Amino acid sequence: MSYNFSAEQAQFGAGFFVFFLVAALLYILVGWKIFSKAGKPGWAVIVPIYNIVVYLRIIGRPVWWIILFFIPFVNFVVMIIMAVDLAKSFGKGTGFAIGLILLPIIFYPVLAFGGARYAGPAGS
Image (cartoon, rainbow, N blue to C red; front, side, top):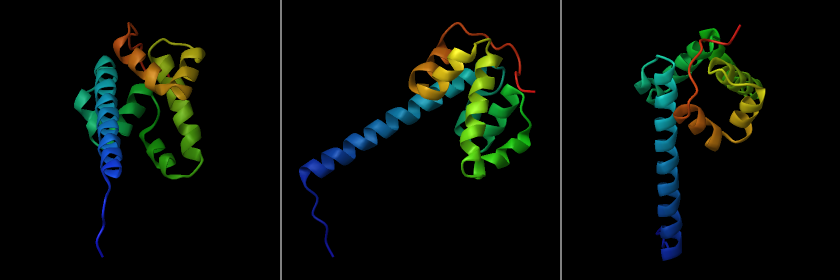
């Protein structure tokens, strides 16, 4: 079986790859800065599973919450709670937390590169 790809398909694939690469680099850069602001090692953002453990420590939630990420639908609720706790940990309010949830491409870089200071874990 042979596959014949058109130039358009190749361009689409290359464009998708570039978009994915830029998104991944932005995620790493923003996460690194947020972790560093919180006094945690920035490199932790690139280590799977460990990055969630560090995130949970930053917001003050127990590490066993990582199990909740593997439960369908519960994981969405947990991510919302974590976004609210992250906003509070950096001295931001509920409005900013809603921004983190609905427009993360804007609000996470604002948190990372803006004037927000880490105030300590907000989780109970």
